[in-house]
Image (cartoon, rainbow, N blue to C red; front, side):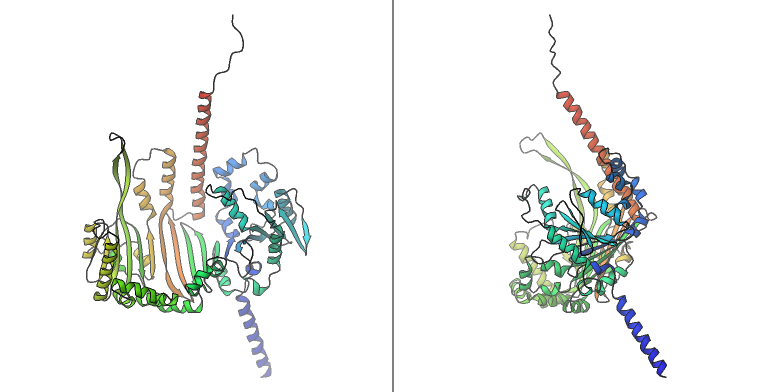
Length: 567
């Protein structure tokens, strides 16, 4: 009996240990807990879907490899990136963090395959710098702009976020900071950042973060982590956030994304976490399924985009209370003839916005200075419908009257470009009266292909990229380069589905699906081909412009002066 009891204790201890370990991860060991943004790249998975040999077939690669100015170590690296000494089958990690008193740092981390090659690779980046040893780490400064530290297994590059911002300012012609030089040498601070990531304790890193561990468990080519609370802390506007009580939305606000490049599509799954107070609110007031009947009644077979949402109206009132703005909004609404309770009762909780029937109309305009001159152009035209479901009719009428009052004060009460109306179930607004009438009649009952994708979720979005591109390219394209790119776009892009608003396992979940026309080829390979076509087109365009410029220069160049005298 005692042996059985001891065995039970051992079993429980092992189970507890296994459970504890499953909540941790190795990748987060070198990422500080206060990181604002983290991107984990599954290099091995991506390299299986798009090999370096695939990239070698592209026009931009062939032009780069044929460049006589690229020689030596650069040529070697271009031929095989593994010559850098970096383990390209290992994970790559980008993260951004900001410690008090700094501009913030951007760090790139990864694994080393060949330490000697990696050291030489960095020496090639800055031949004047020397590798120093510090506490078992190799530390190297690259042109006073970045610092890299490494041991036999891992490396970490650190860049100053302020320096990156200065580079952007230099490219911005409106910035007056382009010629300003940094006043402080940040190499010591960057060295400290690099050394710090190698010595992070578990409670100071993301290694023990359950949400980050759950993210990495999801099968994906790329994982992203966004900490809204830490981003807000680094902002000078944080004081205003506290005044408006918006900190309840930012407390423990984490968003995670998992990206997969699958055959024929890019799939992105999302989770959003919040603090207990806001999580309890989301769980209680999250919506149900979008109203499919409101979508089916769109009077068109040529729908380009639909946004639909279902929500609990009483949640809007509670959301306003969380911000502490309920008194102010009730005071303003009272001037308009309603209050927040009227808003809750008036709405049933369904919204639909749809765009359809895109076409390009031929338009022309006369030059004000010369009536004989006319300019022709294409003006896009389409139908749109915005509708909401009606709850209590008397309360909803108060909102309609308030809307009329607001538009009247804005001088738009007589605007004939907008039509609105209602039936027993919905209120709708459109840009065409006939389209509004057909929608309110509710006789369409269209069974769109995208309905099944949106059904069952509180939020749904559909965009038909192919249909939009088909309309835009229906006109004859006079420029061959532009036609080539548009034709490739038509062969690539199909549609986008976005669903969200589902509260599951303590998080708001969502999914985005970007579909391609070719459903059999991996999306990463398709994107590689697509951007290669664009690059090839741009290179040909630049070559043509260069040739024409040289031809023009030769025409305006004066003929050589004959210095030989003639008798």
